[in-house]
Image (cartoon, rainbow, N blue to C red; front, side, top):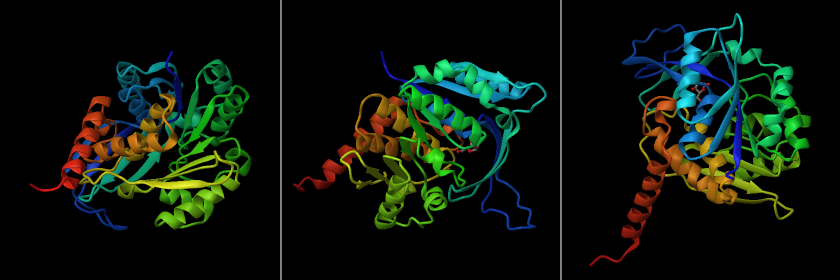
Length: 322
Ligand code: RIB
């Protein structure tokens, strides 16, 4: 039976405004287009897992509204097991307000809503699910105490714990110690280590600090520059930069979520971490060429075609001209 992935995390309704450039403080800008779509780092990562072929479950909460119910239906239609998603009385489904500029960069503000209502007791009620799965994938859009409770259960039952520390805040050492694999971006790596990650060398230093905190495997995502993968498997840190795919970014929203979902699927299939990061780079590369959050997440066949096409171009470029 294929390995099971449990995503514990947020569900949001994303309100997305495309702008030429971000407003300055006190400034009003007129957008070029506006839409609402399904989002939340947890839900996006679950969708990425499912579209890329992972056996996916989600532990989450929505508010007492049709926005949340519609998203849960969509998650179910994606093939995700949504039986552990609850509706919180009196709460609203989480909301994200997102600006996307002409360079594809984003600025996001969140009203956590029902995501902040998840409790340790709810995790305990779903303890069997945490025990039964092979991988637990976490982000930081639900209370830290909830994540910690799930991690305690996971560690007791050999469920591998993967933390995507987004949107990024300082985390207690006692929590980090229990994480098997951490996947910060450059900003999040700096928050956790104090090291400004600008390239290979600084990524290696930041990864070493995270290893010192007790985390055996570290993947630092560096946008179009790829991902720095570092592991303590041989007893000492060994790192390598897995280059990104050269793409024209339209919208980077959910690129990190796509990366994490893809990484987990590849690991669940038994791929080594370095190969999983390559697959995740390709998946995230495809996602930034499209607009939106869940709407940008590719399907497995698309990623496979993209990798094949990239390899054919590389082979043609290196072959001698006639
Ligand atoms: O990572 C992108 C996501 O961050 C958006 O979908 C938004 O909901 C916020 O959670």
